[in-house]
Image 1 (cartoon, rainbow, N blue to C red):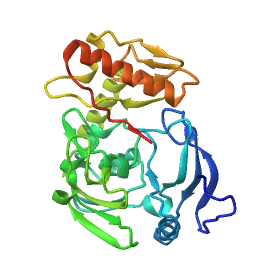
Image 2: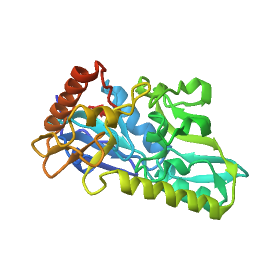
Image 3: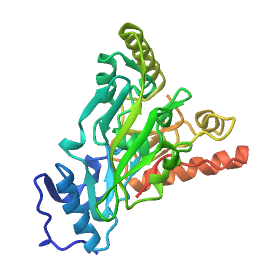
Image 4: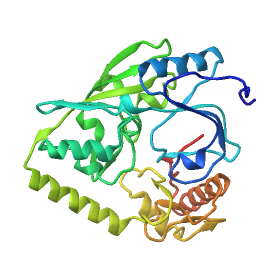
Length: 298
């Protein structure tokens, strides 16, 4: 049941009823959410979380929506995206304290200008720090978990809780936050390494060049759809199973990189889900491997 039209969340930040989720996720599809809130600061966040707790709602916390697919019927509840005060960065020598709401690109720019190395592999990933930690984002054999010292979360009682790296339960494209939906990640501490700016910039350019050459960046996508099975590249398996170019509606398995599903125009969430299932079926038939998605379907 949708939230009542007259129910309000009063915060300094922004609250939008009937928010179209296609405007908030990178695949540019999906239904609407009852309420969308952007809390400006911790006080705002406490108000929104209390609103949800009173109504027995688990809110959906999003970053830039790069690993989400919202179904066409939308979300009966509250979607939260962290606002301005959750986008601060400061450093003391090689240690960085950063808000979970900041874009990875801004964090990388900050660290490079400080002559700090260790996050270059994240270049070109259009997510936030919080989203990257939740899914343990990585590329080229590295992952963000290797740089995390600790994180701060707000729990279901609106209290701060600090978790060390070990308690975050990092795994391949996962963390404790994938199951603890009652926690909101608000801040992280990272340890980087000193480096020469010219060498860091050169590495960044090379990583971005590789992505431009290997990924279909001209159409909306969610990045890689499937996790790599042990000893195999998901893209290779999908290609060999004859899935490249498969299409349902405006959803298409990219011929440029087979582990990408792209939206060629007006793909629905159902189109994408059916295409994912089609790929899984073909790969299982050919290789007896079950493909697990990186994409979270809401």
